[in-house]
Length: 132
Image (tube, rainbow, N blue to C red):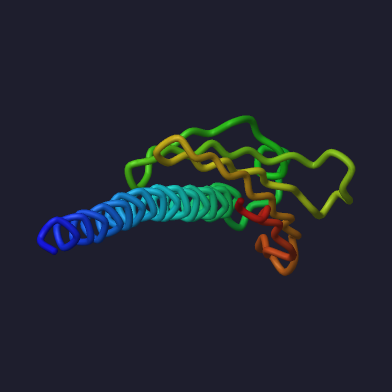
């Protein structure tokens, strides 16, 4: 009778041990996914900051240097952003800004179209790609 109790308790401990190992692996996996999503969101926010920096650079001036300019770099929120403006394929009163934010290995690119109206640049549309 005593050996059957020991065998039964051993089986129960074995099953509990397997559940514990499974829960620990699932917890690590969930933590990794959460960290990846958080880093993607932070990279997107940095890219949006680049759009704001571009709008500041464009200011209220309508000239060839504000409608189109090369890559500008900035370090923000423990990440980096590169933004530029281009008028290729757009009407004379519009400019497209491309901003790429990088944070902890994640990179997100945001594009925005600005229109010059009433002595200032206005954001008329923004495209943020879905994060995976």
